[in-house]
Amino acid sequence: MAPHLEALNHISPDSGHPTVLHPNFNPRIKDWVPPDPLRKAFTPPQDRAFFADPSKKALLSVATAIPLTENIGTLLTGIQLSQLTPTQKDELALLVAERGVVFFRDQDLTTDSQVSFFSHYGILDKHPAQKDVKHVTIKGSSTDWRKDSAYTPWPLAGWHADTSFEINPPSYAMLRMEEHPPVGGDTAWVSGYGLYDALSPAYKTLFEGLHAVHTSRLQYETILDLWGVGPNRPPIDTHHPAVRTHPVTGLKSWNVNEGFVTGFAELKKAESDKLLDFANFHIHSADDNLVRWKWEVGSVAMWDNRVTCHRVIPGKYAPGSRRGVRTTVFGEKREYCFVWWCGELC
Ligand SMILES: [Fe+2]
Image (cartoon, rainbow, N blue to C red; front, top):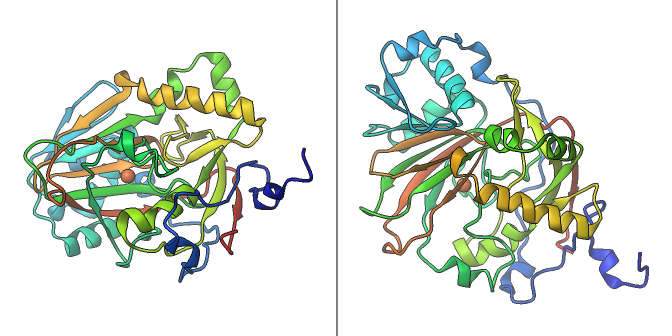
């Protein structure tokens, strides 16, 4: 320890990571006062997949399931989501929990009916930058992310699980594409089950003993520049288990992502940095646990945000030509998590 350092006044306890603003950052963020308070942990309604018949006969008697890879991703054809019964919706949740992500083409959902459909799965979440109460608009990016990373501390194009820094991160998520370029803008998902299974026994033991520091601070500092909107809530650090067990499938899943994890709570800085390098390499080299989806207008993806990471593949398509509507619901709090926040943007 170096007790004379002013930086010690700006460190997230236990994580050891500084909380000062990036020096190149948009000064408007310094004056921004988030309108909403921080959230508290709560117990959401029980996961709908618990209510599903494991054979999924109600759903699979009307839909055709086409696995897109061995380990992640299934295309369901022959159905309209808007027509599913509650029983079929529960079975869809189980399929998503098992396969990580399930895809659909040519869906007739609207924003309102998507919100209604997704409300079956729990309490609708609200992204920190989301102004609408029930959904968030997702766009693409055609800027050079390798160059952009010189100006922002947040890995813009990085692999992530949506808002994994929350105390109750989303369980299920759905994205429906309303506008899309003919080529470019694909999204890829990686299986957390597969990432865990791919580790050696020694690394499995190592990661199972660690908590990953998930932070919204880097996104918080970037969001005003990137999306032009001030974040709703103050930044937060949350320590989630680096390996977690899915409540329904009982399978262990990797719970580290490039977009929001800045280190490991139990490690010294040098150890943490090197292990995070490995973690990011592990995700980026996971071709055997990856599915890449080409969007069309009317395409829908529903994924389990607890056991997958995803990223939009950066491209050169026309800015503004990609627009989707995303809905998420709150998941359960992780087995153990520690929360720290900086209400005064220190
Ligand atoms: Fe995302």
